[in-house]
Length: 324
Image 1 (cartoon, rainbow, N blue to C red):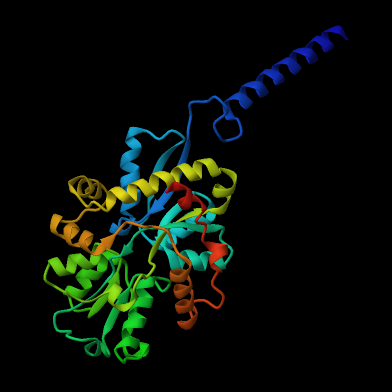
Image 2: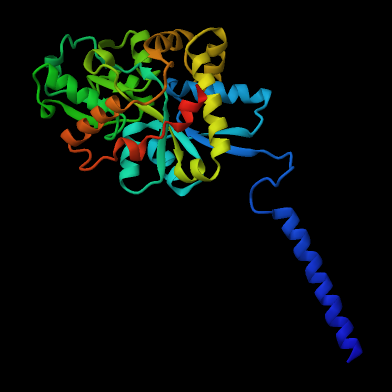
């Protein structure tokens, strides 16, 4: 009996030791108090000029942020990005605001905390198109059904007396659009930069309209974060947005430093980047209610959404307001 009791006591001591080691090693998945380890904030993006504040923030991270480290996660398509966001594999993303609104409407726990940029969308057409009416019966490309680019096309057609059905709207990956225009497969497109600037600098296309000529203060890309990240790790979320705002202010300079940073994320010629940056603004990245409600109205009018999320349910300006 004594041998059995000693064996049981020894086994209990071993189990306690193992549990202690495992608990110390694993913790609860986040840095413990006093630990030098910092929270890694994972943000998804596509390699477009409209996400430039993220690139600048990532570059600034090399100097070290006090409360977090930043990890940018590159995606090749919007569907892949939104899948990762919905699954919680990333904490947030720079993405099409209309796509984020639709995801939120369908139950995805995301909120817009800032804009990615202002303006900077161009409606590019082939050299033989001289006015909007010349697009009748032609193919015109957009990057995604749920995009401000789609709305800009819709509004341009309406503005110039054409019906939406007068053109054949096709969805294409942004990187394919300049080649498709050059080869005559499409007669025009509207998309995030730098893809509009590529066709123009190659002299394969021309700008028919700037976005502000169609819809002043249009909303395109936004920085969104998962709601649970904002709610459960607010201090880190605030620190992340604080640095994002600083990065946007630096991006607006569009100087040699900004061009060097851009080159790390986008493989484009210098003249393409130069033109692309001319069209875009990165100051005042707060998403205001009037612009958002206008976007929601367009989504309903176009049949893209029956019940887009209300401004107060989708937009959280509390972080950016404290970052000023």
